[in-house]
Amino acid sequence: MKYIDEFQDPDLARRLLDDIHATVTRPWALMEVCGGQTHTIIRHGIDQLLPEQVELIHGPGCPVCVTPLEVIDKALEIASRPGVIFCSFGDMLRVPGTGRDLFQVRSEGGDVRVVYSPLDALKVAQQNPGREVVFFGIGFETTAPPNAMTVYQAKKLGIPNFSLLVSHVRVPPAIEAIMGSPGCRVQGFLAAGHVCSVMGMGEYPELAARHRVPIVVTGFEPLDILEGVRRAVHQLERGEHTVDNAYARAVRPEGNPAALAMLEDVFEVTDRAWRGIGIIPGSGWRLSERYRDFDAEHRFSVTGITTLEPAECRSGEVLQGLIKPNACEAFGTTCTPRNPLGATMVSSEGACAAYYLYRRLELTPARTAAPLETSPVA
Amino acid sequence: MCLAVPGRVLDIEEKDGTRMATVDFGGVVKEVCLEYLPDLQVGEYAIVHVGFALQRLDEESAKQTLELFAQLGMLQEEFGDPWEQAAQAGGSPWPFEGDPFEGDQAESDAVEEARK
Ligand code: SF4
Image (cartoon, rainbow over all chains, first blue to last red; front, top):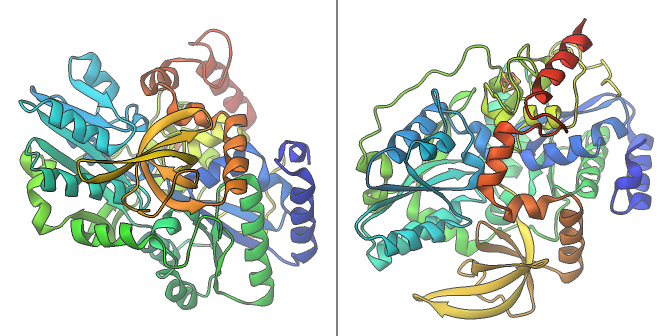
């Protein structure tokens, strides 16, 4: 337990861990959905502090990772057009499209700008009426409401030179897809806390009941993760499968009603491709009919761009929890953060990057067949 | 980028018909939209994501989280210069020290070694 002193409250961490150790009687596999949670887990070695029977499987919850290559290519195409100011969050700069990334587009003369908030991009549009300003709208349910508000404002204020390149994704259909995939070993979920801050917990009881999996809404700080695991393990040991909120300080069951209303107005549910996974029905949002004028894909006619992903990258399996990153042949050899093959290596929240950053180098067997194996301890 | 950081509302004003606030994130001050938490008041804490307050937070948990994020360098990640960070991720030895072009190679060797 070499890491435990680094916890914010080591005594509480110890008590939670003791409780988990005392409760577990057989092997369980839990998936943490959020990439921020994956990072906390690897950074603090939480997976190594847990009993050997409790395996944490990393889920698809990194927005940068799951954005399909072809959306990146569309972004690169738009960003290189003369007269365009392309605004994005900083973590998209290094995500490779086919052959290059936004960073390179800028060095080749493209006007790529990083903004802290989508509203900043709208400001850029107001200040540059003669230019087309495009904002790269990716992300889960946490990021979608800010982007929805920005489009709403653009329409309300009549800002014609602003548009959104939309690739928003939704968590519950991804959980559905993971539970339905043939090699799935997940027995319980740590749901992404901030997604639930917006969406509430309404979508989960039906999922939990139908797949007979406990779903524990969990934050992303080290103690939050331990508490989430503890509650999930208690449920599993008792044969229960309900929705539990272990992140009540930031999640109300009803979510954020104002944000939900805005999402409903600006977006509509659509099928979406997830990088490495493929199309998941109903798993995304696009602009609804009333806001279609603000859709950059149409404005710049890039709907036709389609791209295949590199065959050697196994990020699809990583994102679905079927393999650990270091089971990929390319991990740390032909694929590194400086030279990433897949988005799970390039994003700071990606599972491959987390394993690389915290030196999880030992080769883990792909544990698709034998859940009883124990996890390696460094 | 799904991270949301707690911050304290310093003041509130109406801009372009939108409720906006200046919010303090442990020293970094940013403009934040309050449309999704319209009744948030000066002095209160909320979790903020990409410039939008999304949910109220009590003071104690907010302070604890901020302290933790500061310790872990996550505030720097969130509010630092993104171009610099991207350049680093792309060309520096991150997470290694020394020659920027040695890191990946050494690491690759280590992985190769571990697999033998
Ligand atoms: S290590 Fe690289 S190639 Fe392998 S799955 Fe991860 S991103 Fe893809």
